[in-house]
Length: 427
Image 1 (cartoon, rainbow, N blue to C red):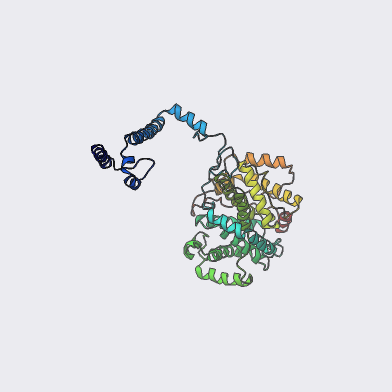
Image 2 (image 1 turned 90 degrees about the vertical axis):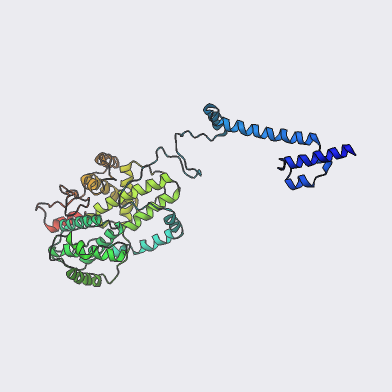
């Protein structure tokens, strides 16, 4: 009896002093176990030995983190070293290695700040939207819109578009707003002869109407007209011109512009490999291409090219400026190779001749060595034909009336007549 009683007493003491279960059983299992099994001394000794081994291994693991050499050896052995590799890769392994991570440019025309929703929408509807706008492109893009004009020549056109760019940059409007206003102006003057003095208020009306159509951020009419520097431009007068403008355009106020195609081709690049390096590179090229497209819109001769064609050439010129290698990227081939090459060569020469204008328009985008990049690319492309120099943009100044970043238009001295200028622009 006494041995059993002693065994029972020892078992109760063990349960009372050691309420926590061992590593191989729960507390309820410990209570339900037979008394003689639980009370055996060898089981208790083995349980504490196993617990001690676990605590010892945990202590060694914690202390190893303070040993830098040992930690580096372990990381190297397991393949999780934190040392920077020669090529930075995406965490999920979906991105091809790039030599350097591009730095995002800071400018109001950089709209690729949030890409998740844009890429999702593009994957679902991008191709259909492109085909739809491609079919409408010719209907909304008059080619020889100065043919019926007698007083308005390419010089007047350039001055007005430069002024629209300054106003657009001042109010931080969308680039699509600028493109839509230029489209309104070209379509209107392709149908109706104008006096040269009417072109400026008509351009102001086109830009103000475009801000209403885009429906995002619209300045007041008084603040808007103040930048055009003419006391005769009143809100009532602009409203009158606006009614005539919409009637002349048959109220077709939405149409494909070059900005749509710039975004479409840029999203194709960004969706090919969804990593930060590719997206940043596409955003930088898009921002620079918008500056080149704005410069091309000031030149009458570049309106002979379809917006989708000119958009591809502007992106290629932007890639050349940043030194991006796009040899492995898929590109749409909707146009003959010789036409694409012709437009690209003229675009590169346009950029070379107007580097000061671009640097003042987008100072955070275009580098100081812009002329070297563009000139070398133009020489490499074998271009010998020079278009009408658009860059006789003036001694540009960023002073007021209100600082906009774009250069003010240079007034060209008389030389060519309007007919001769139009002939040069067509070529």
